[in-house]
Image (cartoon, rainbow, N blue to C red; front, side, top):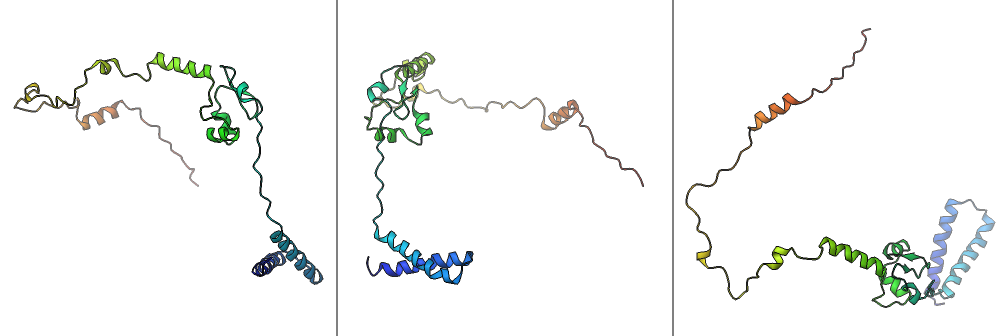
Length: 197
């Protein structure tokens, strides 16, 4: 123990004991013993090296080869139970896929989804046409960057004259409001009558 650590132990003991005595009743004869035991406990904490927590060694519930043997499910290395996907199971245990792979020393390409489930989802997506461009856009010729913009003769000239008329609603706002009021059901009125004294 160094000399610099001694005032820290005394200051800590004073803080701890003043807080304890202010909230608890204590006999005068018991105070010296309390001071001694508190200082001894603080010194012991400083002298003994802090125990370094060792990293937990996790043993898988099943072997890695057995966990991916079936195309219908993946066996969890945490509990050995079958799952179609492990993501929700891992989040229930507070793990991310990367932490799971690191914990059990799995390769980066270790699947977290059952092969059969993945194939079924792929088939459904293909059936729905997901991931494909629409046929009209896929067959349309792509303009090459060398041709540049379309020539001016291909662009139709704007006809001089009036702008096209904008369609207005059938009635004005006033007539629409009044029509909606005519068709509306009247609201019931609640009246409370008090007896006269």
